[in-house]
Image (tube, rainbow, N blue to C red; front, side, top):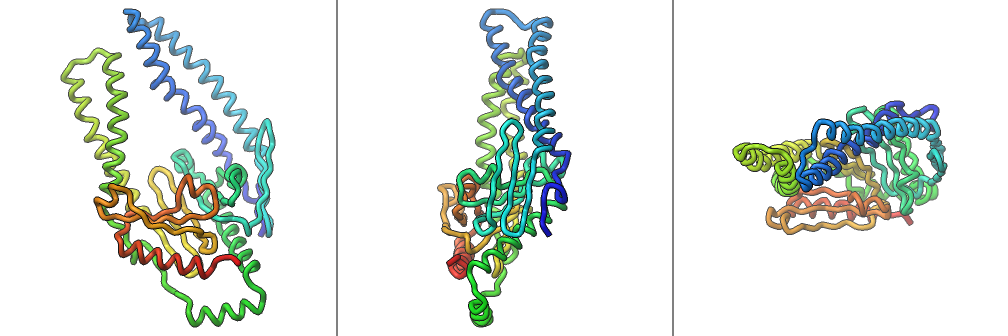
Length: 353
């Protein structure tokens, strides 16, 4: 089966999703930057913003927002219309662009990683992005299909996994080598399956995430709150309540976030490869190919050392792994070593010749 933009189409919900995500930044920009600046300028001149002034500020925001919304709808429709992809038996082609049109080609034998992810808006609309990374620095623009339904995302992921596996076999073995490989596998193949059940991650990792998020978000919100208090006349008792309620609220929110991540995080490695899944507000499923792994590291940050936790990281030649690493965190020392030794043995065994 060969897939393309006709028999495996993008969802039209992508137009709505991309429009919302592109214009959503303007209200935030207005509320957090433009309006406070106007208010501060008005306060510095010893005057308050009257009703007429507020209406002018509203028009100053609404007109650009409306123009941006109309432009974005038109652009996203054209982007959707001209988005083309074709996955053949040996290679894939993706063509995209509105004003400028760009085309990317990739051979399946060059693919380093395959992962499926969703951002917050994708989860809301039930959309998925399928990425396949190569070692090229510019591959991220061409090598993904974004905005397809789950059924189509599953079909494309299975197809890509099968083509990558098939290309690996073709590049590694002649018919005679396949016979030798089969006889070797019966004698020495490690048939273990390592996953979250038999190599658990420690629940202490929740505490680490809570401390990080509470510290960062509390500082940000305290600064924003201080600016709001300067602009709005409220009683000291309300100011005190607002000030001391921020940290507990962030603490509770961080705890729920990290608990959901802990429950949903999953990994599995067998004799053929592996998969790593995580999901909270967004989701990401990453396929791991042993013959693409270049480095396997175990390390600790300062806070992880305090909690006696270890992090295992897999690196491939793909540029994306430097930005969003493939890793398993929250391991104790014993389980980190078990995973490392297993993955080292598999990556050496299946390394491309």
